[in-house]
Length: 324
Image (cartoon, rainbow, N blue to C red):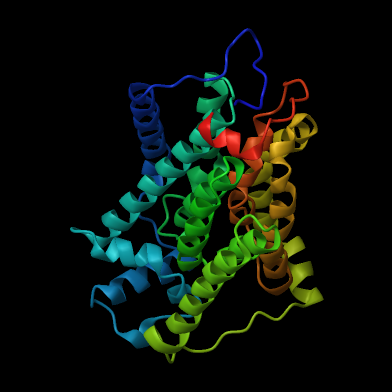
């Protein structure tokens, strides 16, 4: 059953397959428009991911790779397997992932019973954002991580923990810190203990196999927290501007909407606290930018959609949301 009451005399969304096709095509067109201006760009991190894809195509020697970027292998591997020019293939994959993430976030909103306008708005909050405009066109792995996190949130909020577990495993192959999704799943007992532990072990085994078997011998790297690194990050105007623009719309809306959120959104509170730890560690070790907030969008947007709603009624049972 829907867990949010409708407002403005609009009823909870009832979207037929043809509506979803139109919505997803609209998201795709808008994402392409937003991303086209920097399509396939490479700078700093993105060049390292591009080189990983080049290595997987056999166009670059192994000694040109730079840790830790090749360990985030899933998105470069898919791009390398796609036909045609590698730069265009990688950029097209990220476009599809952004479109898919917007669609999944919208689907989550629909399953929770939001009105049709808010369902569409959920996807727009991801696409019409400074991070999508600035970072998504580059050859980065963040769109793949965001897509996996969006599917994880869908699974958690709609009573489908097995879907969440699969998203956590795939997300770990996109970015290693996504293993924390599976740590959360285990700690919150959303799956039988043995199943959750097995999913976590599978993801951890993948990380070990990748570093010491599939890609052995990469130069070691260390992220050492220090006060100097934190002060440097706080003094970097470009980084601060990136953080501010990434937070500009979604974070204030999420903070306001959290006051009106129903009980079924409460799991996102602990999930957010856990998933913000890797960015905080990065802030103490290396420079930071708006991508750390962008990566939290799948968990922030459901709260943002609650702005202007009366305090929602309690759902009859968490599992029932899966059939809303």
